Image (cartoon, rainbow, N blue to C red; front, side, top):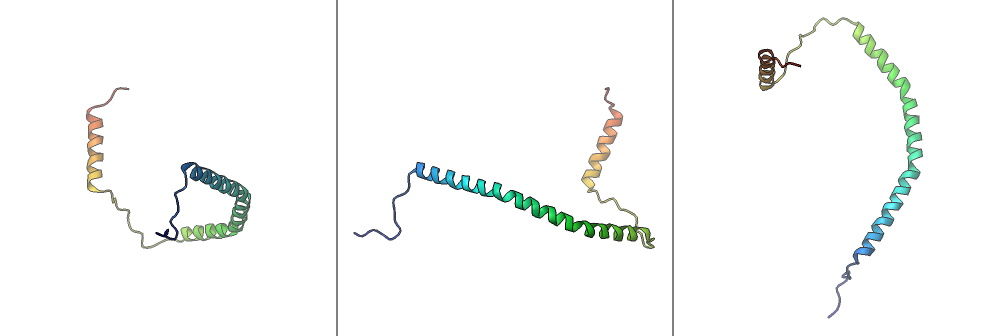
Length: 100
């Protein structure tokens, strides 16, 4: 009977462990070697974003100085069960004051 194509003996565990360690070491060395270039690139991007952030801050300050005529009051959107828990804990603290 002929062997099937691609059917091979499984590798021993020690060979798999060695291959895994070698691949991990190569990936670690590659990442460490790549790190200075990534840091330099992030520094360049951060320096390029400084004028953009300044312009954004100016625009935000200008919009804050313009009075808004249609300001809605803030609404408490806390869920009902959390409000009940808060009221209960506050009343519990008032009734049973803990001595420090």
